[in-house]
Length: 205
Length: 409
Image (cartoon, rainbow over all chains, first blue to last red; front, side):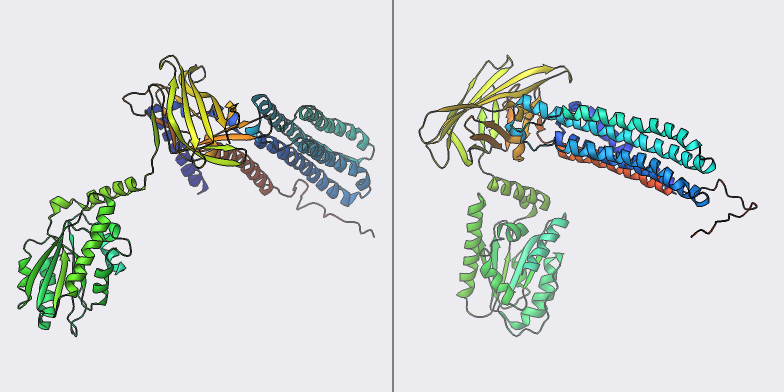
């Protein structure tokens, strides 16, 4: 039943888009389909704030995913071998660090946001603000996505570490090395984002 | 009363037949018949048979007065006479009368035939002229008609039956659709305020108002003298110079110089014209002239259209506000309302095809849609993933050893 609904909506959407396109084509108004105009005119605020939001959001998603993966394994294995709890909290902390990277970069980027009146600026000043918008968007996306991947990675590795530790206590330290490599990739994202966002300067006048 | 007029109006909209209004009332009192049925498209026979013969004739009226207004239509009551005073006295008659009738009937061929249904009544036909040349003359004529009706009926003695209708036939009046088009055109013409049109040799421009804001005070500007144009119409560079003065304070004068350029743009492979620079030379309170060049970023991309197209920019002030900031901190903006401009390629002294400065979706709408799409996608993915969470059943073994949980306190 749901398939029919999807098909209906998709076909209506396709029909609307196709008829709009053909209308523009046949009434000699093809220039109105202007993606470049939309992209260049989107306000720098939109890009910058979306970047900041995505930085925080994706980092938290990664951290949450990692924590629930490793947390459930620790809980499960810890039922039989309670001694693993304290050692395996390290995995949880590695996941949480990913969220902390996210909030650090979000706070740093938020400080670069300034309110400006586009009408009062010259072309070069506006160009600087547009660059700042794109830089903050890129920085946010970089850190967000890399933290997402990092969090998932650390979570799955940590879950394996908990189970291995429950089976044989000597294995924990060895698995921890794998986890450290997984955590480093989140840090790479943070470093690149910091470099990009420090170049973003919004001018007010 | 309003309900009767409204009924007439609505039925005139719906029908495609031609009917004229027929109002009738009487001052005979003590009639025992009930209020007559009024419906659209009645034949006059129905009124005369049912109402006059059966109801009014027993009252033995002395006079039958027929007022024939010139080309009376439903719209005279509903639109032209919508003012409270217009049909005041006629309305009073109809309201106070117990057996009045307002109907839409087929145009009457022979008015005198009505008389046969009211035996013993003297017929008097009064022709009322309505001057429909302008809206004001029409309104005045309607009021005069109302006065005449009132005066006539006031001075009459005895019982009378009055009729207000028209003897003009359908072919003169036109169908209701035609009449409504005429009314709409007329009301548009009445409401229109004057636009300033510049039909120069190269640049054609039309606007309803120009406003110049110097610092915080906004001045409505009116033309001081004729605008001038500079430039050979064909070489891709046209200039328009407007001479303006403030409407309220004639000591504030400004000369606005607008330079238009036509260029071929590589990306769209088309020729586009655009407003490349605006310079305002103004003085206020008879001080020294200040020449300010307005920021081109605010108008270069907005006041622009392809070759042979004109640009129309109705209201949004942020589209037509051209900005500048002067060194000492004064802000200057120039704003057009209701602008239409075509600086190149004007054919036949009329504006070419018009491009609207606003577009189907504004940039804000696009941004909102893109961001909303992104967030909704993320939300959907998240919800789908949460819905797929299940507990691990890897180690479930229904036949195997039951899990023993050591009870440690």
